[in-house]
Length: 188
Image (tube, rainbow, N blue to C red; front, top):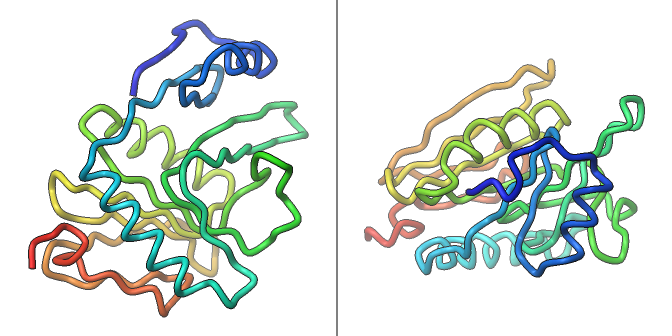
């Protein structure tokens, strides 16, 4: 994850920059981030998870989306916006879509780490997602072969669970969504 522009920008300046390029840009707390192209391993994991989520949710009101669908977190009381491109996300409220993006906190987000985006997904995005009320956030680490799960409990307290290679991860939000880490990380 690289900084496109190290100086702080307004959201309007960001939108102006975004319209000038076809690069994947995110805007968080006044900083513009540029996402590199994902690796083949990243894409394999993303495709597998999206397929599993799609099949699970295809008859429900909830829908799974992949990058390049943008999510805008909008705090109207502070007049601030943040735009991110999660690897995968699930929403159960279809009303928050515009033609090109989702506005608001998705119910469930999955990010897949690469060496260039590790701190961005584990710190910057974790804080953003939890502060805006994302109910469940998975950080899939194919380098370490584990999944870090952050979720909000019934008291809206952040909880954490680590699922290692050889274990099956079960979503807190979608109990039927179970992933065998041996299959996910191609270790079976």
